[in-house]
Image (tube, rainbow, N blue to C red; front, side, top):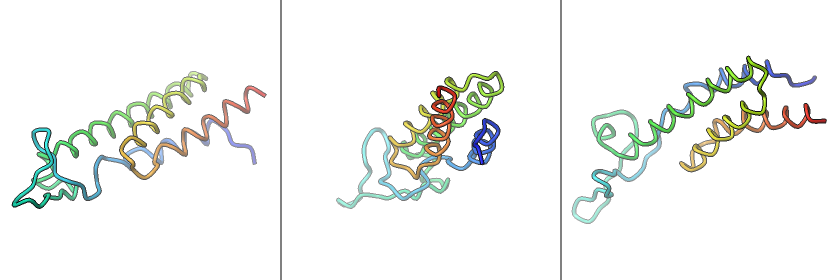
Length: 123
């Protein structure tokens, strides 16, 4: 079965809202510093509790996750216009942002599929 642009759009739509930020346990960061109490680093679970609302890692990751969602929505629009190359670039940018966080690869598979489709069109 041949993969199509519709398959890519379906994958993007299924992926939207699956990464919301730093939803893993990490060191609490406030005012540009890791927070410690009595020499022990404090942890943040990234679960949206009061602690994570002041954790800079949580705030930054949530902002990046929202930015990736915007890129993905722009990729869907680009696909609607028939601009597969631009959609692939947008998805690769989202995947690269995610990799910077060492997060589970949410956008990587969509970026890979888009690149495969670009290569198929080039052949």
